[in-house]
Length: 301
Image 1 (cartoon, rainbow, N blue to C red):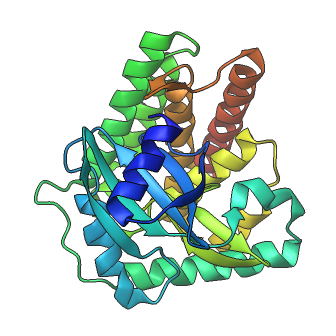
Image 2: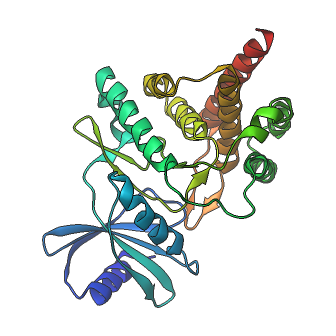
């Protein structure tokens, strides 16, 4: 979607003049823009998918009672072939962008705030989809990873099979997971930080139901993939006080996200292709080996 078209959409739907508009690099499933109009900033999200933002609008409404920093829905609808969603703009930067500048004490404080947010969300009375099944979550991720790795050819697909075998080993734990709501897409992105505190949670297009350890595992893999320390993850895990079975599950989830990241490399979303090169493949293979070694060590105990 061209910036000119996005500006026309905003002016037509909001009846105000756009002073400036820029496309965000984030968002592989949507076109996302920051719009300045009448001395206010807004987020404009656009998609070619039918009913692209119905779920987002519903979830943002449900989350209002949690008293957590989320954007407000200004307007949503259809303009030509695009569905659009206009949201209030929240101050802050994605934690991944400013992570290296955070002090260790700030990482610990942010971890406390994030776990508190997740606990509030988990207390919501939101029903999981009728076909919810935690086994399906793992199976679908593994299936997608297998398909994309096989198609793109940058990684060894046998790694997916190895993770599938671990899934069988921890099946009793996976089968015990309940459909508890949580924010499953906050890792090094979608979590805004301002002055060492959480200032916003964004891109809430869906709600996770199940084991909130997955968002911590995704964060750890993402930080390692960015060659950053994982102290923040250590503080998250401290706040969550894992038992021995949860520790095993956490390593499984880390491996699950490893192969998921591998599958994304070289895949095209809208007009963007997820970058891939030898350095990236070597790093992800090394991360995978690290977690596989951890898994083997846990098994021996």
